[in-house]
Image 1 (tube, rainbow, N blue to C red):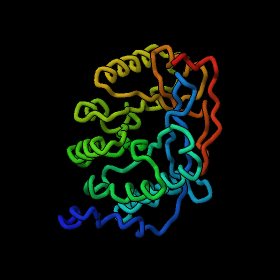
Image 2: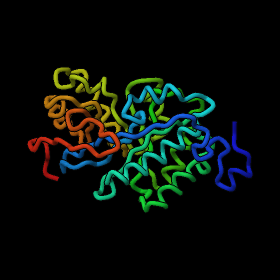
Image 3: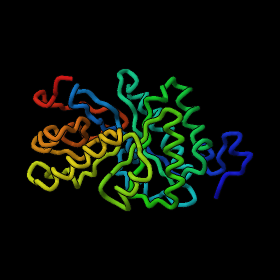
Image 4: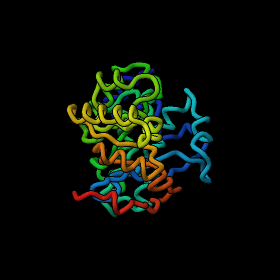
Length: 263
């Protein structure tokens, strides 16, 4: 279903309706993405949780073809409002919001509620990153490429999550270049003890640098994994080793002093 031309011109999307079509509620948790050169959060990823902190699955299992458009819009609104309420704007960190590419009718139309929300609370839009996962099948890769290009022109950051798993990977990166790729945690797990994993991460790092794409390693759980990634040259890292997601709050971060490099 595509929006009617009149809706698109007016910045309206018939599928979104400001989240009004949802018959369930949910909340947000926030997990930091750390910069090892400063020891400070580069960004916080907004993660869906149930109203009382239940798992993401308890929420996502209720999303279907009928409500996915409204859900995607409501996720953006909640992420921005709750992040501001939690104090994200007190520092320089950015906010990374997951979105569903298949839930965007028109990039220009469907972003209007996000912009309205950000303006209402003075949230700088250049501090927003929109990330999508390659685990969601791309029904129309050309449409996804248009979303990324539109968001980049509007000054948003864009990120491809779970890189190295799912439906594509290198094929997606060849077709469109987001600002950021997030290496899948299965590739990071035990990277310190696996030469093939380190070689793959190093190869992806070199390729990304040549394309002007930033790399984030996610799913870090041990000091040894962190040390191995730092040796490769990874600057941005995320995982339970630093902090578990904070329910409706920015969690306290543990960043080993030995890992903080001179900027």
